[in-house]
Length: 326
Image (cartoon, rainbow, N blue to C red):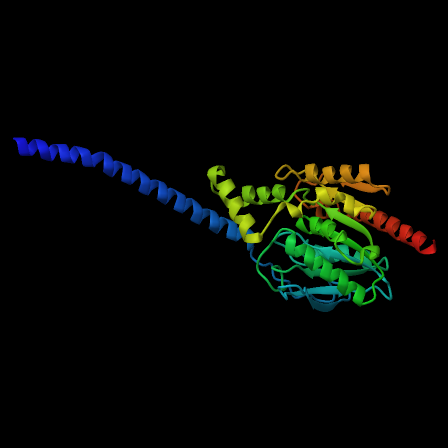
């Protein structure tokens, strides 16, 4: 009887220990699974599938030529694009697509946008940012590499004889255009910036991507995925546009957004406009199209969109003409 009592006591003392170890193993597995799932989700966000540039025919596109150049810097990535000349014009619009797109932001409808410019004696350069379309690279950095690509594009336009440049970007491309203005050595050649649905802080946009692309629960995955996204793409607050507003002045800007509810685009865009308007001696322009989908104003209201865009560009050209005379 004494032996049985001892054996029972030993089993009783081992049981709590086993439960404790089991809890530790479960916690480790939960953390491991959370980390793996977060990394996979973050990798998909930072490495979106490339939308390949389609083969086009002359009956749907204005006259163009294939162009390419290298970004320079540590990573010699090749940027591919199309240049649409308009006679002997020395004024060019640089179109910069958003996240997950290519040089044709609105697919074949983009040619209607391009034609509006070339018909008004304005050249157009549209590119695939690195990691998109037919350009090299695979990662999206939400503005870091993209800004560098725009700087290289501006340099290319200057090398082929462009005197005046209007930057026109969409979504992350819009924010990258705003960033590029303060960094380019060809600042005097930038006569205007059109930003369609830019973010004001990069956190706002990565939060939107995580919420819209991940099927995982908000807690804890929103925070763990965001941590992985920031590490993979090297996203920092240096990409925020708000602190760069003073450096953008006095370049004229025209900011566009819509009325969609899935991303606070209006909050971002209108905030940038109001900050610029208060600080700048030159006019800033803002238009809320009422479009129901994010960065979709051109497709939903094409005529009104182009009227406002061309009105802004004409003002920029007139201002540049006056500056040249002085």
